[in-house]
Length: 240
Image (cartoon, rainbow, N blue to C red; front, side, top):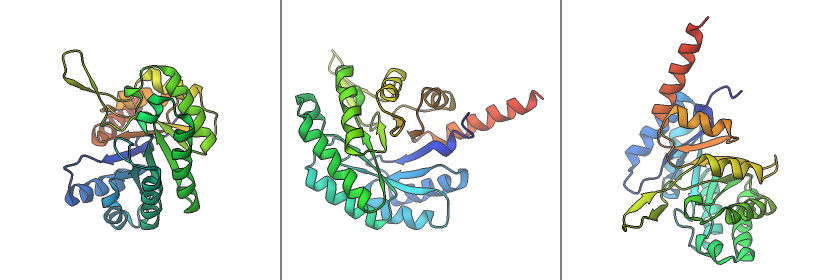
């Protein structure tokens, strides 16, 4: 059984409106409660590294975020830079259009370029599928296979910024689902871990995804999850 759900969290500070002060507050929270990492935009990596120096919480960041459509060369260069600045892990977005086109050679090369850039610096890569925008499981399964072949450490469900158009023209946010986490766990070997991200708002959500095989969680609902974990632990102790 997992000792603590909170220790599996990459606390997300990725909204376009979030400021330096938001990053400082997130780092203070992350260090205090012991999340795995604080995940910031590339422009905030140096600030987050300064804020978390001396703590057990490290800095992670995103590459080609949130739509994955930047060039492979840009993704690799961005990876080199953020690793040099102190990011310990990078979460890259696949080129979704190329995935939907079935251009698997391009997709694998795109992933591999980031993996190799990160590996040169001794860092690891998580590959974001944006599962909510993929029309069926065959795309997700193929991405699991390609990500593993390219050397990724994690496969990840979502950015938290993927929106699917409803029949009435409005947009609906997409995120992690039980089906997708289970599918991704089944189609990767034990060498590749699964990160659930998008729409995880409370302890019950987090616990459910961990039980399905996720070993990392991307969320900005960290305070709520931590409170739920404390409440669950307190209730468990009261049973004795």
